[in-house]
Length: 327
Image (cartoon, rainbow, N blue to C red; front, side, top):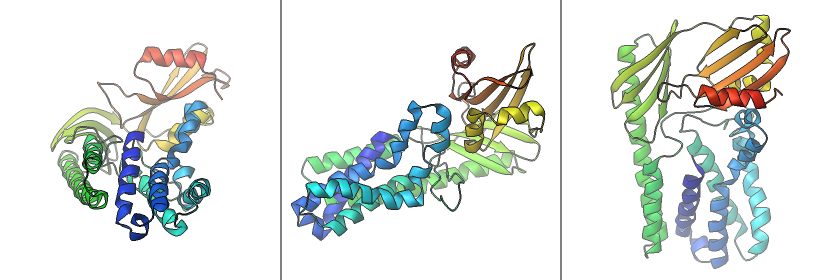
């Protein structure tokens, strides 16, 4: 989820914690728990700073190690070491328990969007992405804000947020039902589909779709159960040619391939260089596929420049390739 949603989730969890008698009866515990749940709802995303280095490192590592099982166990201990000295009268066990809940819920809710996490590391580095909730869901955010406002104007925080979480569970169930209906509608059009990837948007009934069978990729959208297929591409396996094998060694392309489950590729040969492009098919927007990885090689297959990330015009991509050297 986005940063704002994680913030309101942390506040809501801190309010819910007042149902814990130990928290409710001790002001130091209550204050420290609220601080810890807000911090715990944010700390797994500390890897966002990797974007300051470059897109390849960010794409390859964001929601990776910091969202793993060891990290979920470690983050609460780190937060306790920072917060508890300021509240020595707090109940340490209950402070840890609510901090752990905040970190766990952060990682748990992140698996419901299309980006996903590597939450099962170190057992597997596979991305877990259920594709039922957009990274920013205005309904989820709005429900949290409404509950916080109700708390501020005087309602009991514990029962207010307990009711809110029950409503949210119902909303998530509704989203799974909507996704199942979309998948069923896609299978009516592509009965031999081997995989169907849904990417929810901020609009409740609008979904991006990337599907495949043994021979083709299909890209489209769903408005409810009304499916429109915009593009179809032949599935062409990536051959093991010298040019493509050299391109795969590039860190930007390697990061793209570690993250993208459905893509097509292109190879262009010019007088003085090759250009290899991999295109993620999940994020079609206004007829354009903005998430790409591009590698340029000279005729001796030495890297010239490369880029991976979001680019919404060919002009901007050319500009990035001209100023970003390959790593």
